[in-house]
Length: 65
Image 1 (tube, rainbow, N blue to C red):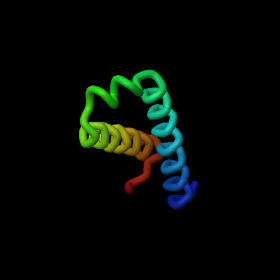
Image 2 (cartoon, one colour):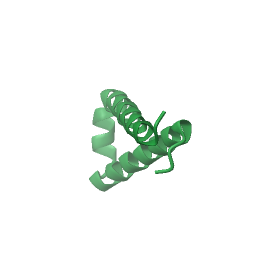
Image 3 (cartoon, rainbow, N blue to C red):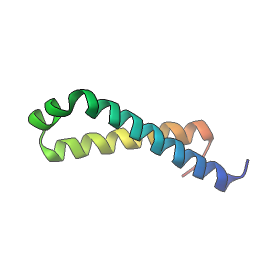
């Protein structure tokens, strides 16, 4: 599998996993998150979650980026 294709596949899988997890989290705790967490805290949590998923998928597919 080519390097470019691997990177695109990794990005697609990362986006799908991140979207699914975000949807499930917000579906169950929408009110709790908005009441308890400031807006900047929510953004930080989303960024950390995205980078963790991205790192894991890149390790799985062997991408360097």
